[in-house]
Image (cartoon, rainbow, N blue to C red; front, side, top):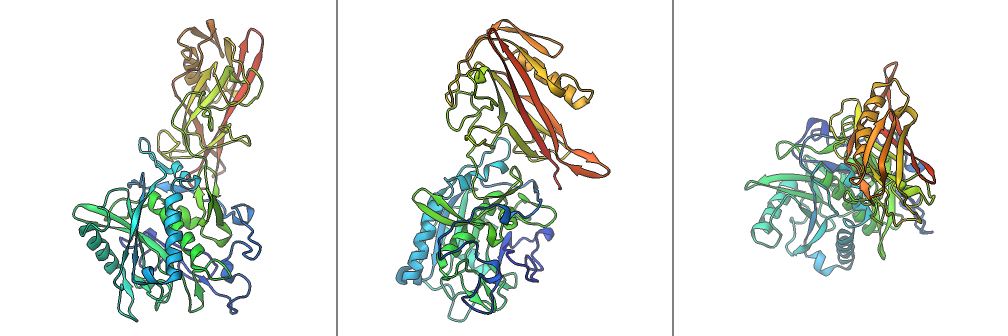
Length: 512
């Protein structure tokens, strides 16, 4: 859906709300009201940047929208989205404005999934089912007009047309990854559930996505009505009323929501959305102050930023996750070290997954997870605590900085791991000690209290322990639930040095 203003508009059609689990519309983009003067100040806050000066606006304080949490509801996600566009109408072959818009959409869908915009979806992947960047599967121009002049294009007719093109082999067969993008021409209003897009009798949305079942398959699609201004509302995002950034903003919005929440009952189970508002990842960030001119290669696209549970805010990109790897992985670097000393690689932390990055681009030493988020909470249950997968690596040949690993004589747990009466801290220490004992296959580690001593000194290169479960509970005081934090701190001793390393893990409540 598209909630960009404070206008007294229902965020979704009254009979199609997420809370009611409508089978028709999975998301809508709600239009913004137009100021009385057509070319006055940005209409209804529809404009995120100074077009005349070409200034780019990144999500930041002006885009901060408070606390939200997307929760998972058991349905399938789209792992490797493959976009196929159906440009419907002869205008796409003959009209210059239509052709420019089509070229822009082709370029955007070619590049967006493989960029760090696509990587922002990865935090919502399910265990064993990673989300890839996606691909462009091609397009087709349907030369016949969608409707007769003066008529509205019904969502049921759109579904029927998708089936026709698939059955005629002009569009690819439906798979779990296929995503059909239907783009009618200028002047053709789309109607769905009694509400319409640009130019319709009940102008409410700028785009939507949905799915339907046919022949035992699910067909997932989005509809991008041609942008316009009508009846005091608009889908444009710039002063010049160019259709290109408008198509990009709505198209990126629906693409992201299709990946993370493609279906609704009865077609399929729901994916990720906010239980309080029903908003999907792009809905939360649909304010115009959250639109971003995102550079991708030599191009730039006006995209809708997306909500990140890990970041706790709207983002336009995220570091692309790397598969579990040793600390030898050079870019962006899989392991966490808090020092840049020559002994920094004596011990490094490895968290799976870890999308955070420090200012140098290295894996971040402060890792957050939302309680119950299956991407990072290993037990995938909203039970008031997060379970992180953590490993310890010794003597890493880390190519990211100058470092000479030395044989490790001992590793000592410090801080609350060593001296706490808290049962959780004690359990975390009890999990880490045997992992440290067995980290180096060429040395026998033995724990005495909070210290693991290696005989002989641990000298095997790139020796990593198995992953252990480290638990971080949320805080609860006087009925108020806030994020919980645990810091894992150790001291590594060699014959010539002592180096401290720490890792901070944060568990965010499911509802905050």
